[in-house]
Image (cartoon, rainbow, N blue to C red; front, side, top):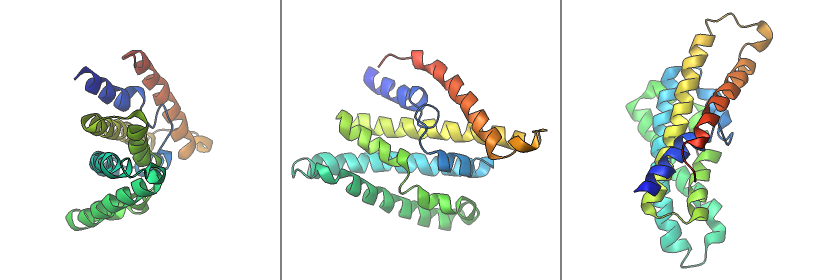
Length: 193
């Protein structure tokens, strides 16, 4: 139980994919202009991470390792994630068309997003069990969601702030991201892995 708690805290805060590993920045900067799109992408991202981590663990340990097909893991992992993203795309189009059109191209980018692929690759390389894999997927999804919500709330305030013209838009967003990453560095002493 202690290891599961450590994996969750480490993946959500200490090894946050955005602020410590600098992964997923295209979606991070793309959907954080509005809080509504950031929350929608957070829910979608976390769902895809957890479900794909579970299914990929079963396929990797139940089929690929016994048949010595682990050299195909990136191709198969992308195929599984693409299937889930397509399902999420269809569900979101039916349930919330306005959010679907706001997320636009970023939904398709989930398929080959480095964060989505990083979770099953870490699970495979670390040899995590099923519950540990789910925990890593959930913790990583919550960590990414936390990054999206923090950045969206700051960017909405920045639109009203008197930012010099040369720093408006993406430059000030990169500076703010760097400052948040420094703050997240403070979590590094929380747990020793």
